[in-house]
Image 1 (tube, helix red, strand yellow):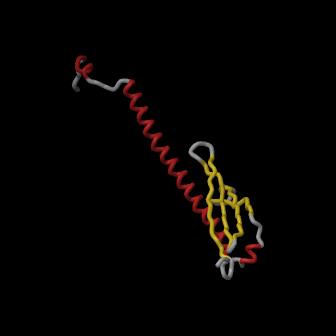
Image 2 (cartoon, one colour):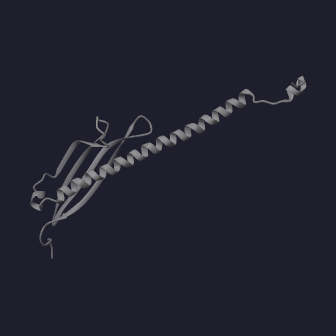
Length: 148
């Protein structure tokens, strides 16, 4: 076994406490940045999924109304609000509650159908932000349009 002399041991350098603390702090900041990007990506993809589901709800309502005869469509109320609809329903009440508002506007030679889906989406903190999806279409009056 080789014995190192006292002077040789002092010449070997190691890491001091401040260097170790700075390295740990930089590592924690880097790990925190990576984890926050995962959280942002997850919330972004969930928001996009809800946006697509809201579009499907609005499109289904418009297709349902467009399948009616014009006289039946004209007899409906101008504005109707449906509550209790759910986005991302996996059962057990885990979905996001949304509201569908349908507006019918009579015009000279047809009718405008506007559907708005609104819900609250989670944000990166503990809060939420209101989101809406609007979809409009126009239905022509059957027969010859008004005008010359």
